[in-house]
Length: 397
Image 1 (cartoon, one colour):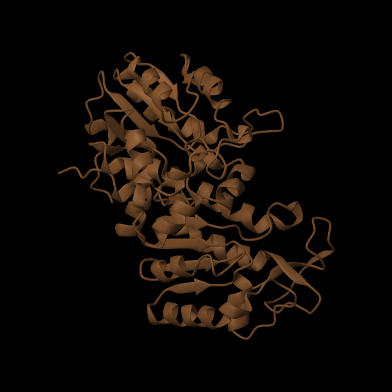
Image 2 (spheres, rainbow, N blue to C red):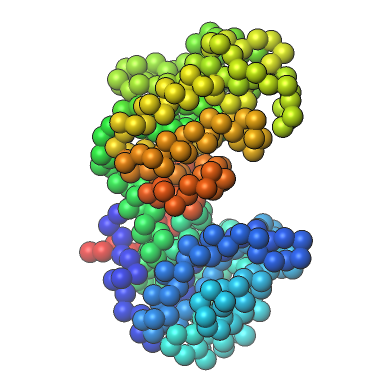
């Protein structure tokens, strides 16, 4: 995946460049953008194409409009917002394919920017329909994919069109994701520590199996920890447990021992009598959880052990919170991990999803080496899967 052409390998002057970005941004009730992180992340690629004299055609999805136009998911609010960030006009197309859009692209001058309407307004996008891919491809001369967050989807605008337009290259954001995640998986500085949290073991089984062949230490927290603890015969009260995954959790614990990987589970917990922000809460002395109580965060002993382990790490990947960090009473474990990584000299990679929200909540995002923009994509990368949107890009040689 690392030997792919990048935007720096392309001669962009006078060329129409179809650039797939991830502008799947949250909109408030008035239709205003409430968080422009994904737009800002694409700016280096956008600016480079414009400054090199390319004619930039931006493609993205927003939400899940089910293959038909839906005003709630229009990308129209993004055009003026992006124009403000760039300090130049951004034209808005009425659709993403068709004669009117083709006419707009043919009239573009060097440095112009055109934003296409939501590609998911057509069923052919998610079906990766060849005819829809061809209609997208006829708009441009070159293809750049800068949407890592959608790279695990084999859709027309992420995969299909890359087989038609040549060369097809990675944008700066995509290249950065591949560099950091690729280095961590292929040749990490050691000790290599992975921190996995979140609710379900089932979501992370393949990730754990792959990481057990690569890491020195695996720290597990969040709801998924209690399935592992139950597999060890420990009583977990009313904590979240996937009963049908207890056997698999036991197998993973055995694999860790066989491979010499230190796999740490919580030694104590912050427990509650209900799953709510203002529930009665207390900290256990040890690993057992009494009936009628559920664990919603790791406890102070676990925090000390986990953060102590991170002090000596050289590479750390973090995917998933240690507890229900959305509730302040159960956020301490997750925030402690964020602070430990901020103070660490290790290469620190935040693997998308809720971990990113947690780091943002901690106010420490600028102290991490890399924050991945793709939740599902970064998980599949960590599983060792080939991502279709990356595999379809042109090779350097």
